[in-house]
Length: 454
Image 1: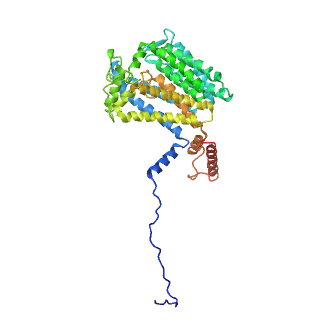
Image 2: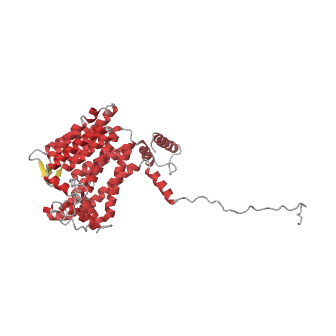
Image 3: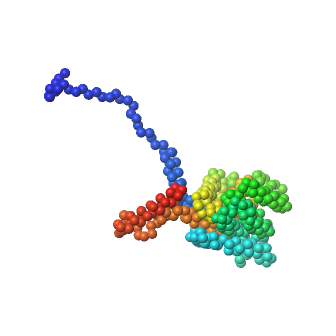
């Protein structure tokens, strides 16, 4: 072995045996995407953006479909093709103003407005039955003429009145620990609700009465009504409903049309069957916007109660699923607002509005699909009808206001919209005020999250 220059024997270096190299585990793309979606879904402003964006998309798509579905009906009545669209657009503009006002009004003022709105709704609903003032549309005496082609349906405002008044009533009783007694839970909530139902049924509007009943049971469930009490009130309402259906040949015929595939004798199920025809002929992507065949006189109420059928014919399964997804997102956001608040009034009002919109959408779409009897209720924010659109948009403004009142959402909005100047680091900003302002925002956000919010 040759010696090294230093006279020392060379050192033999041994290499460790090569084995399989441990590689870092690869990230699962689907799991990473799911984690990001979960984090985005759990942000403080998720409910706020879902309510604002979902309601805006439903309203805009509804305006488009009203214009498409109502043209033939308007021409049959010797009216301009855009007649119903212009009226709906005007109602949407007024409803947008109401939505903005409702979203900016403090919660205390909403509670103060509950009793005047209830008194006004009861007065107008009683005024409908006065001869010469109330008018009948499609056999229902529940309209008041405002002159010209404008009418108002007071029972639509009765839904909003019941939600606000009942939310304030239950919140005050909860603050006094009275909801544990069944008489305080039922009185005066159930008698006032039955008063509104009686005024509605005097005009023969069974569909609106069903929505009001759903709101009542939703509020009782949120108030923690015992099972026996809940079942008892539900049994009484079901018995009254059966009597009202049995004593009306028109309602009995609608009940027989569930799942019908043939118009039957005297075309009793004509509307239900042609709604199915419209959906079936749409396919996956529809026949194209404006290309519906059923709206040419075959499908009654194409731009009101059965606008979902025209949507399925022109936009196909993709269009109808998009509408369902928007209503599902709106319902989830309402439930989230009601579940994450500590204010009892906000919980009851948000739950009542969510029950109202969700139940009405389910009843309308279920009737078009042939799964439920035709109740004659419009699709919220989507169907033609200013009387239904105005209180619904005000109710959406309520949900937006409640979503903004959440402490974490308020802090997040404040961080996105600083009050003074520009963000720290922008040109011309003061180096002394920037850190102080943003540290305050961080403290507000952390304080909100520490109370249970994420």
